[in-house]
Image 1: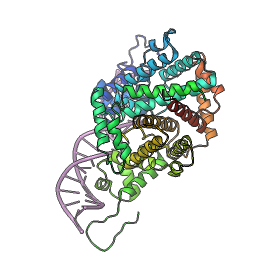
Image 2 (image 1 turned 60 degrees about the vertical axis):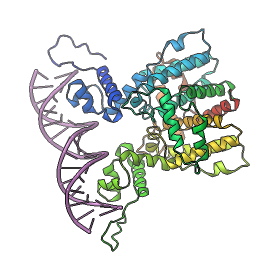
Image 3 (image 1 turned 120 degrees about the vertical axis):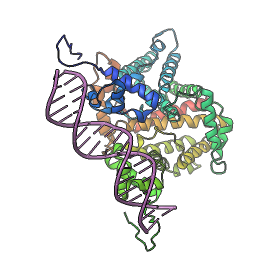
Amino acid sequence: MTTAQRGRPGPRRTLTAEAIVDAALRLLDRRGAEAVSVRGIAAELGVAPNALYTYFPDKSAVLRAVVDRLVGEYDPAALADPARPWRDRLHGLALSLRARLLAHPGAAGLLLGAPMDGPRALALGEALLELLAGAGLDERDAARASYLLIVYVLGAIALEAAELDPALPVPPEADRVAARRAALDAVPEETYPRTAAAARTVSRYITTEQFRWGLDRVLDGLAVKG
Amino acid sequence: MTTAQRGRPGPRRTLTAEAIVDAALRLLDRRGAEAVSVRGIAAELGVAPNALYTYFPDKSAVLRAVVDRLVGEYDPAALADPARPWRDRLHGLALSLRARLLAHPGAAGLLLGAPMDGPRALALGEALLELLAGAGLDERDAARASYLLIVYVLGAIALEAAELDPALPVPPEADRVAARRAALDAVPEETYPRTAAAARTVSRYITTEQFRWGLDRVLDGLAVKG
DNA sequence: ACCTGAACACCGTTCAAGT
DNA sequence: ACCTGAACACCGTTCAAGT
């Protein structure tokens, strides 16, 4: 599109879709998901609320654009290096996606709320399919495997993000583990003995290590190809 | 709405937490997530909006109770039968959970939005841990495996629900497949060749079969135990 | 084409009051 | 204890108008 607004007097051109997404993400990080209102974004940009409707049809389109922006923030180097084994590259992709999304817990909560059909989400899916094809999977298996991997990675991120306060900076991993263990400790032992026991045994629950472990189980399952 | 205008003047006792969750779920099914307002639920119950605050501290607590109600709707028989192999029982659990949650797409969208700490979610986690222990996993592996399974099952359900119109009855699977394929067909082939190709090869994308396939890959990975 | 002010039809939540 | 009416401080979106 990008209508070249040559020297004409007319409109002001103070906004761009990009700037709106930026402002929404800033608000999301600073004050959490429910602070992200059309009016709040507009105030952040110093414009009237309805100015946004020139660039997006409605609020949910803004939120989808925010998600797409973040989904595009994986490390491309993780995919490109042909010297690395395919499992390593998938690890790199998944871990960089998780790291970048968990840095914005408010946005991570939006991940599975709407279909991801933005350009960056499509590019990610395409890259994933290419990687799996390179790993030797045929078209059908690659499609299935990519869907499974997306489910795992996004599900894990969303589940982790749900436990974070979206208005606070993400606490260090040790604190998150401690919080999780405290929550498990609070579970009544008579009613849920095994759940309560998990507080004692699982020392690294909901962490990078659990994420990697799960990813490896999924990749093992894919290699087996049953 | 059965207003119990019974004799005594005192408190009316026209509501229960249960009735509020019922009303919220009805609204969710009929008109989608964004129609579920405190005022809407109250109107559904024939009561003033602020009456709900006697039973729930805020709106999000009502929504969490709705999610917990649905999470409790798995088939207990799927778990109980000791004659069935453990993989079969896990399949039964996952499939019944998926079927029941996808019947309420509006609610499924709330699944990963908040931590699931309701009593039914705890009971489900406990049942899952028990099942995995029965399958021979030690405490640590059972905890990790249960987390992985929860991520997969809830992630898959949420991702599927995101593509459904929450205000409409869930369409038959064939229609959902057709819609998915049409979406893939619309992807520009020059930019995303492999994604576009998926429209031709994946005939059962996003269906019960894909769900089962993914579940089997995950279970394969767990059996391998890396 | 792009932005504004004003308005419409809503929200969630609080509070004092009635029973 | 339970529910109400009224009010507060918000929403998303639309519309006519100005440039």
